[in-house]
Length: 231
Image 1 (cartoon, rainbow, N blue to C red):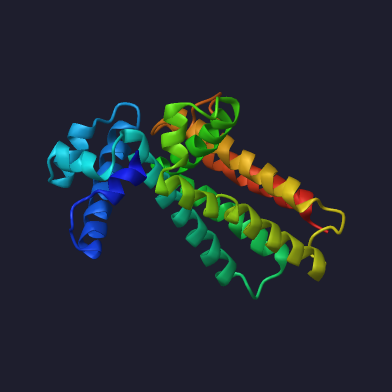
Image 2: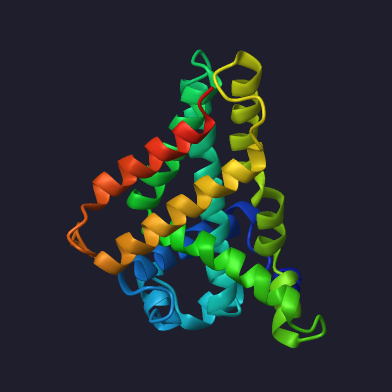
């Protein structure tokens, strides 16, 4: 298992080992961003990282564990984007700040397709883990991965940050007082997820369905979400 490998690894200096691990994750992102997770191969990732396949497996014992590291990077990046949006809008009312968070989420997913896909894959994985047997060997390897544990500390933070800005809007009067903040936050997430799925299906074509321009769909989605909150 992944944690076991960490405990028996060679005596490389921790900082050097961490740098090598980051380099491997960078290479995996490069490969998977081009080929997708399913079609990517550990041989290609090792080559992109400039290491042998044996060395790669000494850091990540499976492609699944390596993908967990990418998922963690995705949650880190998304959280930083949300914090940045909040900081930029701290002088604005809660409604404006909430709109900015939703828009930043759209933009994040557009710019970082692999990250957005990995976040969705993580939540799909969580649902699968809850349905499957706890004693399953593959499940045990997943939940004992250090990156899986790290993601659990971050997974709900973007949602909580959005709720906090909505609550601020209720207090300053820009958002209706009877709004269920978590419900509207989840509605915003489903809105973005649907948009990204369409974006994925369309590839470089901006009008994948019935000649609807996706940028117009994005603007409409944002407008409807904010209208539902506006006091």
